[in-house]
Structures are given as structure tokens and as C-alpha cells.
Amino acid sequence: MDSSRVMARYDDAVQRSEGEAVPSDAASSFRDEVTKLFNGHFSRLHRFLNRLSADTELAADLAQETFVRLYRRGALPDAPEAWLISVAMNLLRNVQSGRVRRRRLLTVTRGERAHSDRPPLPDDAVESADVRRRVRRVLDSLPERDRHLLLLRAEGYSYRDIARSLEINEGSVGVLLARAKRAFRESYEDAFDAP
Image 1: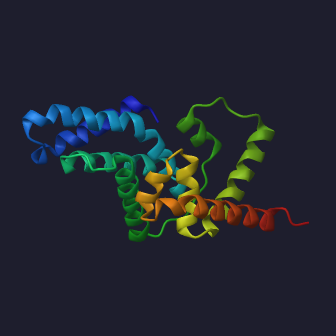
Image 2: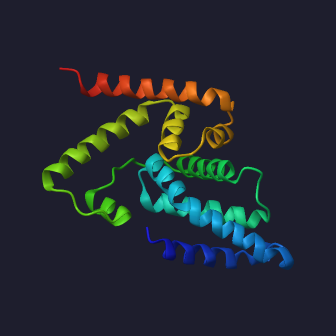
Image 3: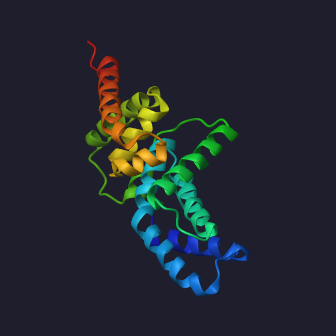
């Protein structure tokens, strides 16, 4: 996803909501802080949502909407990263509960557009697609909290941000994460390593 294009879409969305803008003396500073958060966290939030939904465009829209809501809020929350994760997850839940969607995998072409890596060799592409399909199937079979723990940690979020966004005790994150990893590994082995 081209960050300049996303930022332009974000700016357009914010300008459309200017009726709810922050006071003018604080607007520049607040906008700078939101822009800094956007530049630092949009990609990670987008990848997290993309992995949860398996829909690149939906993930981009939801990540953008999350930042628009932050801007409309008019003030930064105490824990901005955790707030962003929580809002993004709620938006995704709303979309998923509002309509029944078929889950679909990223195709090689969509993956290339989204990540702009060089195209894999045909054999590697088939193997990679098979691994993604297997991982998606196992992730989908896990409880929601385990799935969120694994994906948030894979994106590099801190235990503190994970705890706040999932509303669990920070001291429990390591144990819950270890259990989620073990459950994932066992499910994967049971499903795909059996003779």
C-alpha cells in the first residue's frame, strides 16, 4: 500500500470531518502528533487487520478509519497504540458481524501489490500459498484471544499494548502467548503433519 496515497485519503477524510475539528491553537500540534502516529503505526495496524481479515482493501479502510476516529477524538489517549488496536479490532468486528463474508486467501498477485516484493518462483509460490492456507486454517480454528495475541505479537506490539488492547493483565501476556503458540503448533501438527 502506497503510504502517500493512504495519507492523502486520510487527509481527505479528516478535512470532510472538520466540523468536529480541535481548537485552532492546538490543531497544529495535535495534527502533528496524529501524523507522527499515523506514519509510525499505520503499516503495522494495516498488516494486523489484513492478517485477521485476509482482505487487504478492508484492512486499509479500517486502519484509515481508526486514524480518522483518533483525529475526530480531538486528543490523544493515554496509550495511543493500545487505543488504535482496540478501535481497529472493534471496527473489524462490526464489519464481520454486519455481513457474512467468505474468507478468501491473498492471491500471489494481490500479495505482490500489497508488499511489492519480487515475484516468487512458481514452485515457491505454490508452496508459499499452501503454507498460508494451512496457517490461515489453523489460526481460524484458535479462540479469538489466542489469534489476536499471536498476530499482535507477530507485528511487534509490546506486552503492555497487547494487554491494554485485549483488556488482560500485562503480567499474563507472556503465559497466554506461550499457550497460544503451543495451541497453534499442536493444531498445525495435528492437521498437517499426520501420516
